[in-house]
Amino acid sequence: MKASTIAKTVCAVSLSALCVVGITACSGNSTSGSKGVGGVAATVNGAEIQEEEVTASVESIRSQMSLTDEDAWGEWMVKYDYTPEKVREEVIDSLVTKQLIIQGAEEKGVTVSDDEVQSYVDQMKQNYASDDKWNEALQAVGMTEDEYKSNIKTSLLQQGLMKSFEGDDPSDEDVLSYAQTYISSFDGAKRSSHILFDADDTETAQSVLDQINAGTLDFAEAAKTYSKDSSAQNGGDVGWDKLNSFVSEYTAGLADLSKGQVSGLVTSSYGIHIIKCTDEFHAPAELTSLDQLPSEFVEQFRSSLKSSNQSKAYQQWLSDAKDNADIEIKDMPSGLPYDLDMSKYQSDDSSDSSSTDGGSDSADNEVSATDASSTSSDTASDSGDSETKKAA
Image (cartoon, rainbow, N blue to C red; front, side, top):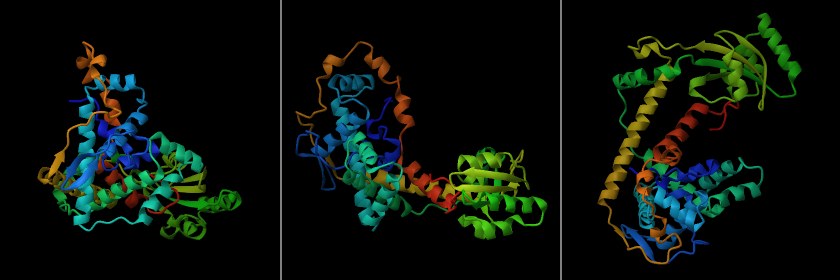
């Protein structure tokens, strides 16, 4: 088995959405700067994949992996048992998948608006201090913002296409079996509520805390009256820590509490918190019934199983679509910028090391369609709009 898969090479973390659909190395459709050879590289049900798009993708990969130097590129290919032909083949295969996704989305009426794409881009740009930093990040993966938007649109089409498949509803027996496998990771889970004050309102926060500790003010009622967080209407309840992601200061404050206990004033980037641990879960030695679990855990397990069934249905469709597609791959033309005379890089032990050394680096950083889609879905369902929870 190959140690590395070039079609799923590492993307910059903040631009990882580009790899959501498992498409080639964060590359767009632009041919600017690729110095590619023109013509059609492949057709998919009549749709053309241009040779320059393939070249632009490969050159983007080289840029990300700091392999723009010819010798570094040649040595990397030898190390991981690649040739320029194999590189081209894998990139074309990923672009074929991309084209099948686009065609499948059109057949099923799945659409993505420009506003949806722009909203996602705006959200990602917030992770950068300035437009210059954002553009530097884009340049690091060899693309423009328009190319980034193109990839985001394909990514969102893929997610919408996956959601169009109906996953089988799991039975209680299936959910129980799933829970028995994963319940140990929920051991020690804590449920909590909090009251959030503005960062400069220490006096009010301390006064409310003193009243709660004195027993003259109910915590839930105090949350409804004073909390600046959207959880206020639910008495400050923000759910189980194992099902959500909280800012580190909140997590640390909750960790010191047992059921029924209230924290002191906890300061985070969101303001001042008063935290109450409202419940704790300890995994039973033997799980024999779903009644032994909090209902939120059961629903999470059920949702995960349904998403898995949905993903399997989508993957089966994609496999069938590829098997039944009319795909024609043209011969590799000469003069491609990533095409080298590999004979100068061959060594006696290169083949022995190619399949083992360093392979985990790329594999560990792959972002698959299923993982990215389910992560996005889980985040949306878990986080709600509570300001305490980190954006995933």
